Image (cartoon, rainbow over all chains, first blue to last red; front, side, top):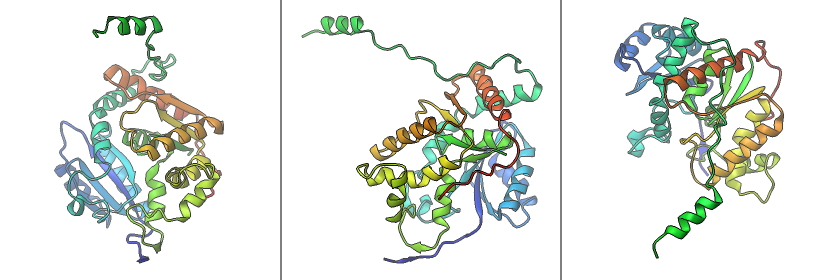
Length: 153
Length: 155
């Protein structure tokens, strides 16, 4: 078995997603470079990947968030940028994990709206109704029998 | 700062909101990063070595397939470390092979058994739900202790 020597040991990598009507990933990258202070930045179609020492990355993320707080979203990444096990330059097709991001990217605008309301202090003080536990109505046994009975032979 | 386990463990929205409101999100990336950055035997693509299913025995019985035990070797220590959890139920992006599906069930079971505070939500489908989603997450996170947690995982 081959020996494994990791790269970028001791660093953290974070994804930065921008879903903004006023800022493109390219513009975000330019502004991030200005504040990067040695942090490795890779521009992507949805935003950036930033890699570096944890403190430096946290500092940069704080700065990046301030550009457009309700339209910029950040999450951790396990792999460093360009890793041949994940990079689609080597694999072809969408990068593993991309489709999950794409799915969540579509509902980011609702989260942005929630953050804006929160910022304006317009969220009502009463208990926020948790959107969870919405009971799905189960198929009634009588209705199932009707469906079976009405099925054409 | 409380450590909050997020489910789906790869969720961008949950990871962002937890960090934005001043806590530490515990997701899959942390476990994967630990393996990717540890020298040893080359075991692509995720550096899950034969040791991991053995570690997973702490969280799943020996009859459970090694795929589930290997995955639990990543998630189990994070669940132990967590002070709270946010779960998005019926997340349509949280699907995968049978190993992923069974691991997801075991993660949810382990979280509910652990007795930590849990917030269960569904992804918003319109702006009104988005407002309620963010408000519910904020309210839940505001109720968690702000100081550094001493709880340690046993990875």
